[in-house]
Image (cartoon, rainbow over all chains, first blue to last red; front, side, top):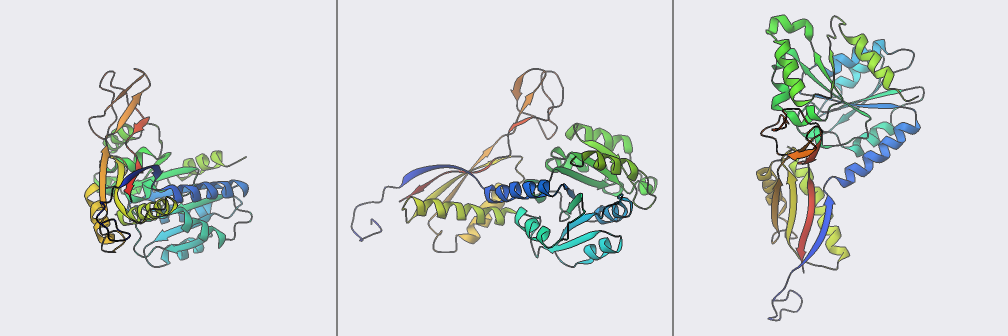
Length: 227
Length: 113
């Protein structure tokens, strides 16, 4: 039947060529975010890792050490505002996004969160993504830099297991290096694995607890600030 | 895990395009996904099946084409298909960071009436 009047003329479907990116709504919003951050003289960093790799601990230390200006953080979790409160106690201006069941942040959520963040006098905004090594990779948030973190307790082959995220990283941070010995972490193997999937990425090795490596990361971020 | 979000975007795009073309029925969707796009074809089909419980989509077929990763070697000046996630050029053994294809998430076309 034709679908209109019920006659017997068969329906002949026609093909429409579209070539449309499934992420185009997100990508368009990310472009707007990027423009917005740039207008405010902000360096925006998308920080990604598995849950429990130490993103928040690293940012607490960064907030305490970031010179002269307050550190801005937009932090995403499925539930609770624990991270935002921790970061505020460390001196950051932090806004929590509770994603519900969403496994990643999207550009529109970041735009809404940024509107609620007091950003005058700020020059660095870190977007702490939902702890997940798969889904966040596909979603541009409007950041200038992508920072991927993995801790010494997670195993040296993390970059090989989750190449998608590491391949798009501008920098990789190996965290919790104060636990390396206790965890039996094979540093050289981890560096070889990183080199294999992310040869372009800048490498930092840090401990939020001892403060090791934080100065180098801080310096790198300062060099990347918009002039 | 974000397949459902992608399927929602796909359906929005498809419904918009169909309306613009004056079409009332969407028979099929041709979607291209790169094997490095971070999505799973079976999970996409499952997410679509959930959505297709709605009468608007119950007669629509989702056709997925998976695109194999291709890299470019800056030394040999040619494209190659990497053996695995490490993008080693089979000719010279150098690492490539230049992906030519493999990250597609694209609604290529659809059949409507």
